[in-house]
Length: 294
Image (cartoon, rainbow, N blue to C red; front, top):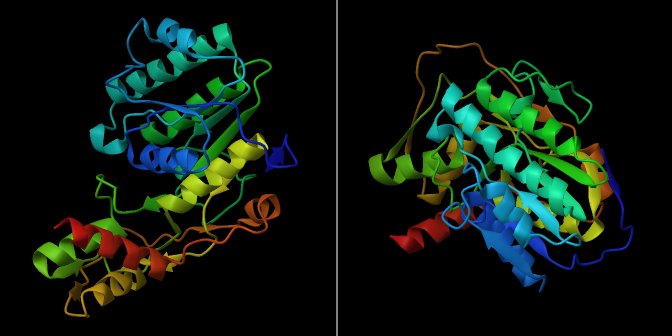
């Protein structure tokens, strides 16, 4: 659940975006700039948060009136081992040390739905965190680190599965299906694709982030649409973009079927006028954008 410190929308004086080159960071930067909000967009090439001097360098850049959005992290495709965990924690340690020196008006930390037990089928913000792997444990630890900062309003965002044309991770779902369909003319599912998941377009994630910045929102919010579809349904939506010339292949099931649904009551209360991009429309948009690149 979140609380708006600014009941009326008000632009922050400046946003410092850490992890600005990533999939979600790029979309957020685009929407911040569209709002004419000053932004310092930092990438790992400009500031490596894992370096020993990172905290001092970041503190020198920050102003007490800044809003800080912390996205920087090594994603699972970069590794799920202990070394990756420790580097991600070192990055967050640098951010916290910098904020302890400089302060800021608002901190938005991007976590993940990986903090929840994968066996839980219905998730709300009140669902206890119970990460099942190092990636989820990393994000939950970084959440605790963020909340430990005294006198800084903190918002934790926990996005579900994010898709869009800029995604390079190729995780199981719309983006991988589209690439497989284009390359091989077929989509191969795990089992019969019975599992249901909530997928959200990256532009919706960015739009919600900007709204949270405008309202200086605090607390915890699951960033999800509240609509879950099976992977078979998603494969059908992707195949439709190719004129249904794509073969959808099911395989013998190796693992139990799991379901996941998000109760987005708190999100709707916080932003009652927000309208999500329907999955069918989002997949069509991604298809058009990515086909335009080829």
